[in-house]
Length: 313
Length: 277
Ligand SMILES: Nc1ncnc2c1ncn2[C@@H]1O[C@H](COP(=O)(O)OP(=O)(O)OP(=O)(O)O)[C@@H](O)[C@H]1O
Ligand SMILES: [Mg+2]
Image (cartoon, rainbow over all chains, first blue to last red; front, side, top):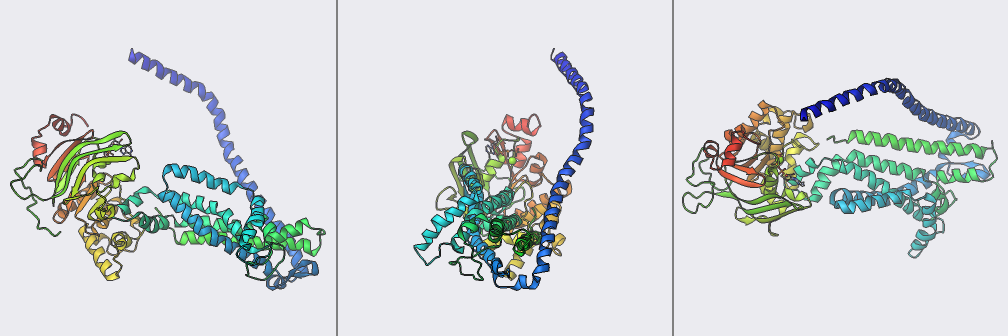
């Protein structure tokens, strides 16, 4: 009986397969179309990128026909409303914010990642990781007001600080990118195979030694990628710096002062009463181009570093 | 090794199972396991295991899949505690010292009791750095000393001639068998007393397997070796004593010749004659 049942079942399956065959032919046609659809999607995003870069280049070109590119790159005074287009103050502003953010975020982010990946129990990890990711989902405008209305008054208890300043903006940008570093670095560290940890532990290494000498080197390229990505975020961050760092371009590395970043100027230029077609209007694109070059450099750097120092496993 | 080695080729002690031998030869034991129970959460994986592991011999552990061989082996260097839910009871003495006691640091234990895993697991580093890893974490930093240790360990693992010209290449570039011998060299580099091996040849081809087996014979002059194997011929070929595990029980532990020619337990007999498992 068992045999009969088995046979019956087998025949059913065969019949089902036959029935499906008709449908499968349709699927096969569909299969052929799918690569094209996917290619189309890829092409769209590539074209969009090319379009953006093209626009940036074209408008920047117009700008540089009105303002000498050397004056732009080496000028130390950025006051477009009085006709001074020296971009250096904006660049130092951006760098200042980025450096402060990195100083805050890299140690904290890495340490959280190490804790989560190497020390936390499953239960703790399951609570903390989603929490971190919520932190990453907070709108930056909220961070901006947090910097302005909480960080700055807090710091003012200890030091002389203007209302708008690079310090609190930078620190808060740092806080904003911590989850990114922590989460991506944690992914990189968790994907280091356990067999490597066991190999080291079995030789009498402590957990910390395993972390420092096995896990971190093996996850290095992933960690670098996460940091660079976070730096790109910091360079491009707009809302926090617009709200909390001020709008006074200054060639300075003094974090207590008000500054202006590349992005914050773009906001100012785009929201103010800038006339279409004026030099200021085109300067927005030149500044955007500068920003683009910076993030591009960061990406190239990250690729180079992770290729150079990769430990494959 | 500090203690003089006893005859280690085919000795036939008059005691059975290496247990309760108060009289007779002064058999030295590296491990004395008594009444060891182990649970993964609420699931018990080892039941009342008692075993005295002899020094400078090869002890094989055989048994069907899932009977607790790996669990037992990993208990000996406390690697099993990597699984958070693990609970143990009973006692394991390493050279007279209780390994579960607070005063015996787990890192100290593992410095004395090395381990080679089933799948070769070299670090993503150069051959040299792999072997030098252990000495380095234990504070040996001088290049000259490390060079010496690396060469000695690679020679000890019978792989020096194959890799001496490419010490700075990644260990991943080697064959599986070579990688496994690198891992053995890595374990040898800190000169432990005991080497635990969990199916060290199961991922290897026959030639590499033969090499590792030969190596084990060589190593027992200086090390006590405990080896888990699925391969009964291998156990018969290379071990002096064999333990048979079944469902978390240690059924029989005696001289290898004895166990394979004249098993005292029916279940052992069934297993070695291939009636189950
Ligand atoms: N991490 C774990 N969590 C829960 N149970 C486990 C764990 N590891 C092993 N076990 C259980 O403990 C028992 C013994 O497993 P162990 O790996 O020691 O067997 P083994 O004899 O080495 O088997 P094999 O020959 O297949 O390697 C099995 O029933 C297994 O399911
Ligand atoms: Mg096993």
